[in-house]
Amino acid sequence: MTRTTFLDCEFDPRNSALPGLLSLGVTDDDGTDYYAVNADADFGAVLDHAFIVEHVLPHMPVTVHRDRTGSPDAIDFDTSHPHYQHVRPTKEIAADLDRYFEAPTAPRLVAYYGAQDACRLHSLWDNDWSQMPVHIPRYFTDIQVMADELGVSELPEQQSTAHHALADACYNRDAYRFLRSLQKQRRVGAEDLARQLHANTELIDLGSPAWEALTRDQRERFRRSAQFLLAQYDVRS
Image 1 (cartoon, rainbow, N blue to C red):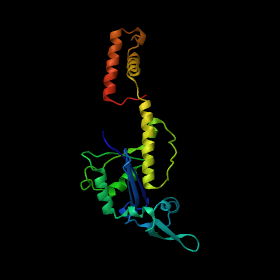
Image 2: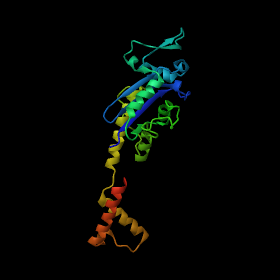
Image 3: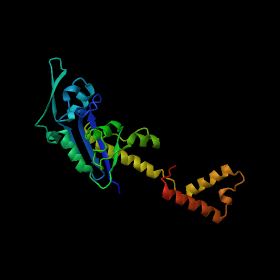
């Protein structure tokens, strides 16, 4: 089976270059985790970004210094923080992820509103697919698109720390599993699909007999067609 991985990044949205990447977390179906804080990040550039200062940096191995008015004026790494061990330069992060994703074929990648996350992952190789290892996923499945297609307006509440890259990646796995369970529940059975195929013929041929009036052989033909379609396609109600 194809391995499924789940990605989240914390970043400065105004800086798409590598210094704009603050941290990255990824996990998979088996709970194999990877977390890194970018040693090359431009933390000084986010001093004026209130959301990052208030909601992202408190979960990272950094200290935010404030001036007399209480405004942030400097950010330093906190070497005593338990997550400081995850601080590493971008070249090392790229090498780590090369090993993490290594497989004969690229794993499936899942993210939540994930366009930026995928771009930040690819930026570790300068967004150059010719230089990026073949097993780094080129595209991703977006949890929000899955939810929209299923008509789900509210996902399960995140119980872990929000805006911590690894915690968010693990939540993405939970949300994905929730949506996949709904997909499985809504798959069409062979008998229902056979009846729907027959109903479609009734729309085309108004003289077609009702399902109940069909002979056994006629019903079996619809059932065989339904089974063939279900074997080839993922058909849902």
